[in-house]
Image (cartoon, rainbow, N blue to C red; front, top):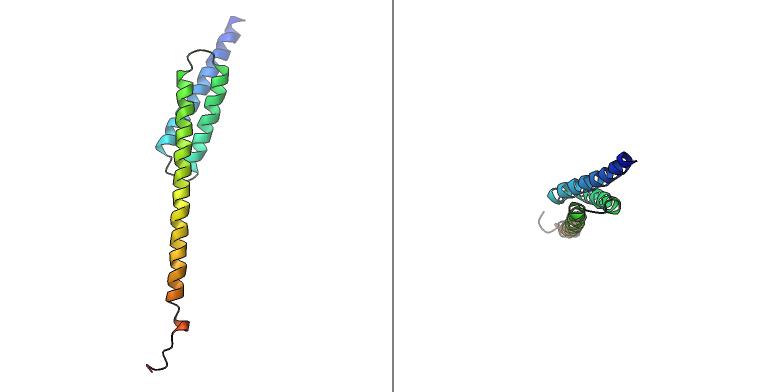
Length: 111
């Protein structure tokens, strides 16, 4: 019976450690669209599961949870920034297309 309790304790520690690792990788790769956010969500979920399973020495699991949340927020900021950037480029290209449209110009006096 003691062996089973020891395995359950190790399982919580392992899940929390994997969540922490995913969170650290996501904070490094948060600038890659969708990939950093997916890693952050995975780190948050695994850290939360590890937090529920582990009753003592929860510092690493809590750190994984906090780092995952920060990485997710940074990923969302990057995604919003990229969306606004590309929306601005599209708007500028559309306005340039309107101003460079030669069908609106009258060249009859030049030829």
